[in-house]
Length: 186
Ligand code: IMP
Ligand code: MG
Image (cartoon, rainbow, N blue to C red; front, side):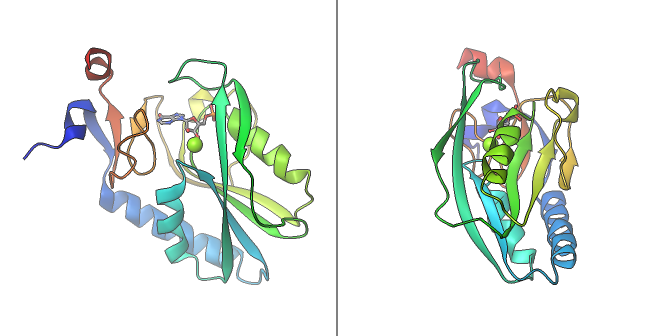
């Protein structure tokens, strides 16, 4: 049976089992690092980070809270990034004096995360770290330190596992490379 996403899939980049294994490892590392942390807050960046957050938190065995921050980037093409960043939905939680761990799907130029980290740092958290599932390191134009990285990937446009293709297919349990020809024709 064929699925609607198949026409846009060039190849599977990271399969479900590999993803789940790595997410478990990240959760265990984070659990060890924050073992004595009294007030951990995982902050998911919407919408791309949502699958990653929900899987990751199952493996974070330190008591923690979660919250959500929605951001969007403007000023450049749809499949480019690096323009203006805007906060679409702010956190509900107070963050002053708390230990924050940002959970993001992918770091590309680094623009979005630089903006978000500066935005949060201004509220004086006790600490602020970054966990990103995917790192397109070769695309970086803004200096940013990723404390926990799932996978470093090549400069290819990917979708699935939280990442969208024109807002769809975030539900796929794997990360796939987009077939740009199919996208251009359809
Ligand atoms: P940055 O500001 O250039 O680091 O862009 C980060 C944001 O761009 C991510 O949070 C994603 O929303 C989006 N993005 C970057 N690369 C991809 C991709 O390959 N597929 C889907 N979204 C992407
Ligand atoms: Mg994102």
